Image (cartoon, rainbow, N blue to C red):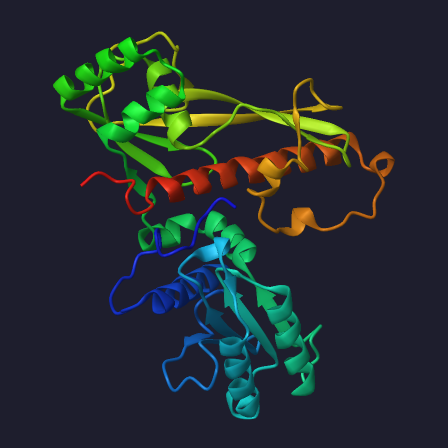
Length: 349
């Protein structure tokens, strides 16, 4: 997914006082942007099991969240309690459809429990019960980001120690690591590196005397971006990334020093990740069923079983699907790396 809705990035803004309220506020803001605010009501406790009510569509929303976001799962009990209460007040509230708005996914057992309980309480689970998971809010956030960007903070501060480690991971020789570290210490200079696949922005100390390639290597390592290609057997295709650093949309030559491209302290570059696909498995590509990739993947509509044979897909369909899957993996790599970067003990005191 392009966005991460965990407590690491979602801001708690007044009058909200906790993460759950902050998630509810984001849902309300996104629903307002998508459906209009005129008939949308946000309720406060005692809310009768309904956090947000759309009077026009007669749809009730109950917001459930995990501070870990999509990397964690939701249990059933809290949802069952809210559902039971909401059904008890259905006539008074006037809703016809009840949807759970979540930043995480239910376990299979939890989903089954909620669905079965809804049926037992008289709801048609196909038309009167909805599950709006993180993928739904990811799409809305991408569509309406300017309306909600103040509610999230995706700026990551990277320290000198992490820069040194990135050089080492990029297989720079020790003598170069030492020389570049000295340049960074002397410069008292920092830059910001964004990327075109997630809203994450890295802010880190650097030196205007180092090159675009040096900066690209550091950003790539910190974000965990692998240049490996991935093959997808069911599509008989493969895809991989090509990376560059851009300023105002223009790619910069690898050998140029940051000073030569006029980059001032605090200026922003973008790590541009282009995805390329081809028919068949590229030599040395890694199958998407490899454990390294399965560990990164998160469930989405792209992972659902396919009944359409490869021969029935057009080349455009296969290209679109291949690039979408590879983008999923790239985004998962970035979020996984950022989570490790901010893990306790990783930041210097």
